[in-house]
Length: 481
Image (cartoon, rainbow, N blue to C red):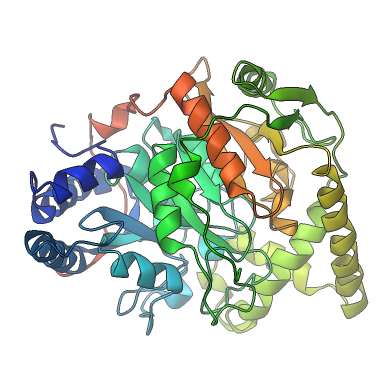
C-alpha cells in the first residue's frame, strides 16, 4: 500500500510542516486514508475523529503560514487510547457498559496535545478498563498485530500498538497501570515509555489512581521524547502531579550512555521467560558494555509482588464497577468480571496489610537503585501469542496479568520503557525493558537512543501494514466523515 507519509517520523513531519514543504491537511488526509485501509485488517480504533483531526490540521496550516507556529506537535497526527478523555468524543474504556458515554472534558494529556497543535485522528482500542494484557474486548472485538495477524498486539494499549506499528501515525498516547504501554510496545516492535508517576498528570482520577500513567508509544526514541515533552508537567487537578521542571527529553537523546551502571536481570528472581526471549534480550543488555556502560547480571531483585499489584489494581477497578458487576454482568468480559470478584472479596484488613507491604516493596526498589542507574529485563516472558487468548499457552491457569511478570515497577512509580531489541526466529518482535531510578527518565532516553543508533529498528515494516487483506474486524463509530 503506497503512502507518502506512512512510517515517516514525527520529527521529519514537523520539519516538513515548518518549512512549508507539506501541508498538515495533506498529511492528515493521507493518514485518514490509511486508517480506512487498515481498520478492517487490524481493528485499532474504536472511534475515528476525522473532523477533529482535519480542523486541527487546518488551524495548524494557518498558524504555519502566518509564522505563528510554536507548538511541539503542530499538524502531526496521533491517536489517544480510549482510557483517556477527549472532550466531546466517545469515552468507552473498552466496555459495552460505557458504549455511548461521551467525555465532557479533556484529560490533561489530551488538552496539551491539542494546545501543541496535534491532530487527533481517533481513540484506540483497549481491553475492558485496561484489565488484561491481550487485545480484545466485548465492545471492540479483536485487535490484530501487524507483524502477524494471528497474534495479539498485547494490551491494554492494544490499538495504539497496532496503529503505530502499521505506520498510521508516528506515535500514540497509551496508558500503563501494570505494563499496558510496555507490553504492546514489545509485541509490536515499538519504543514505549511511562515516565515517573505523576510526570504526566491524570484527570479525571483513574480507577487505579496509584498506578496509572499516560505515556507515548512510538517507532523511534526521539519521537517518544517529543510527545512526552508535550504532555509532561505539573497540573493541580492531579494530586500526584510532579511539581518540578520538565527535563529536556529530546536533549537527553543526544547524550551518550557512557558511565551508566546497568543491572541485567533475566527473571527478577521469579519470572519464567522462554529461552529465546532471554537470549535476544540478554544480547541486547550485553551490548550496552560497547556503549560505555557497566553491565552486571543480578539474578534476584525482589520477590514476586503480584498479590500486592492485583489488590491495588483490581480493587480500584472493581469498586468503580460494582454496579455493572451486579446489574449488567452479561455485558462484561467474563475474565475481567472474575478477577474483579476476587479483588472485591478482600477484607479491609487484607487490603490494608497489602498497602503496607507495598510501602516495603517501594523501599526495596529504592535501595536497589542505590547501586545501579538502570535495571534491564525482558519486557515480556514470551513474544506475541495467539489473538483471542487472554494469556500465552505456556502460562495457562495463571492470572490474566500475573504471567507478564516484569510489570511490578508500577508499584514504585519509577520510569520504565520497552525498547525493540530483536526478532524471534518466527519474525516476532522482542522488547528489552529499561527501568530507571525515580525521576530519571533522561537516563532511559540516553540509553535507548544510544542503543537505537547502534542497532536501529524503525526501518523494518510489518507485512500487514502494506499487504492489507479482508478481516472481520469491528467497524468503529465515526465522528465526522
